[in-house]
Length: 294
Image (cartoon, rainbow, N blue to C red; front, side, top):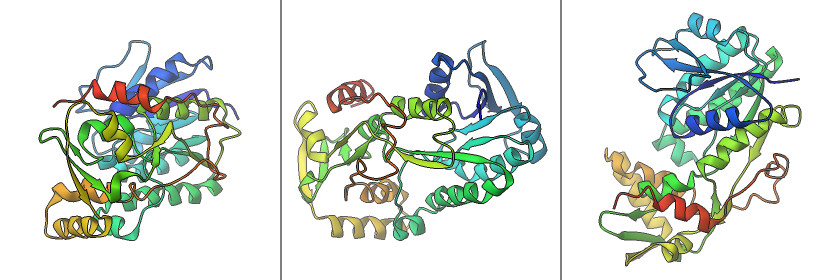
């Protein structure tokens, strides 16, 4: 199998980096970007852009997908449900490989999918890819746990830049995998370059493992620290979401991260297979802080 003709869906933070690394690859991919009619995103003149209605109608998707070897989804979490349409169209258009928007968490607790239903789509899409193998569509899932710089800049790791306060959970010592957007984008392109080795594979990737305490120690200035226990902190977040307070939703997601994980010894760990260049914590932190609006 040779995957040369690539169609990319999504031009945001991750999609733009995937496009950059596709263009830089020695593999010399032929690249098309699928863009919604309402989108004002700009693309390099060397890239073919195909416009479709915002609702992604099936017939137009099939027509856009025809002649491509692989479709890469880089849509946001909010657009994740659209992937069922993408997969159906990919099968009909005889696309060989589909790379879903699977880039975040691997294990999703029941309480998270209950209170953040969009996460249910994440694993439903994965299962849908499994089903479509028998119809000739292969897939590769790239899972990165958290986008490190976005977690720093948005306060997802529970660091509030406006108040300079942090909720340090159980001492903040537990480590979890973190990956920069750039490394995720490189992993997607490497998966295409190593197409047979990555066929129908879920690959866990990371730059490093880190913790709230390590992040706190690296941040400039003084921070007010509130030490909290995981269980009551989580239950409070659940109660807020159940009462309609959507501002607590990121806490729920981080609650599934902060309990920690070690991927290096798992069979799905893909850094070596992809020959993935990784960034250090120091390097990633310095870059992330450039985007902080404090």
